[in-house]
Length: 354
Image (cartoon, rainbow, N blue to C red; front, side):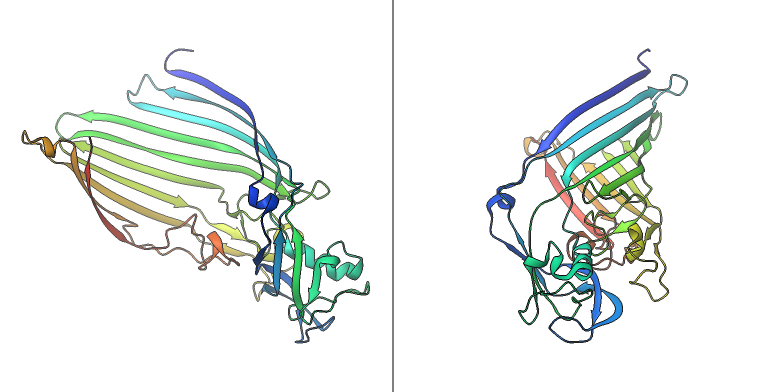
């Protein structure tokens, strides 16, 4: 190998200790979203209509657990950096990553309520469940818990899942200088997701979360929001004398939102009338920034001063609709982690460097 081609690789082990709150904190109250048998209005045992619904029913008390152990991970990366001699200023970076982690995952309420309805009082979760009328499960009859009689579920924090992901980070960068119009730097950063698999317990099969959207109601304990097959982030930077201009682009391809089809939970999607998956459309946005370095004119106070003006989401693209349930990154009918929810926003910044 010469200076134009470099190979690199890493291997590491790590751990994350459980937080003090998870170990010894007070119970936290929650109103989770999940899929459950639809009720006919009664607040005690039974009364199912035979249909299922998805939403927020009853409440949950998530208690701490002093017996939690650290979550451990292993990671491996391998890649190369290639600077083409034939095209000065062009470089290509490719890195493969493979990461595994245990003791992860949230509480899968849909599976818990399915277990309660399958086993009744014999369910391991029955001791922590109370109907809306304060009664308890006393028989092993099926389908006793519904959307209208679901009261309070008390459950301890105890993540038992593990996940593994692998993919490619690819970057292409090209820089060149012109005689009359300054310096240009353009390229693209991208991520190509091969797999993102999770299972709630070692007894379960892995589910594939790559290329789909999942939320707390149907994510089977491994809610990961929106995980597209790839993301592209092209950019163009230009510098000429005291003026710098930057354009940043984002492209996210369409993603499937299978709802209750995910992981084979049901043969039809209970979140749609037609029972099919929802296809979240592709998304494209542009951000623009222009920076001017103020001449010092031999005045100390003006040295290192710049003024930047720009606009985020230049094309004013709306975030696509995402059929998510619950709070956090998936509320507001979209995915706040993946898309811009503000719309076109102008900004102005005055900065002094010392």
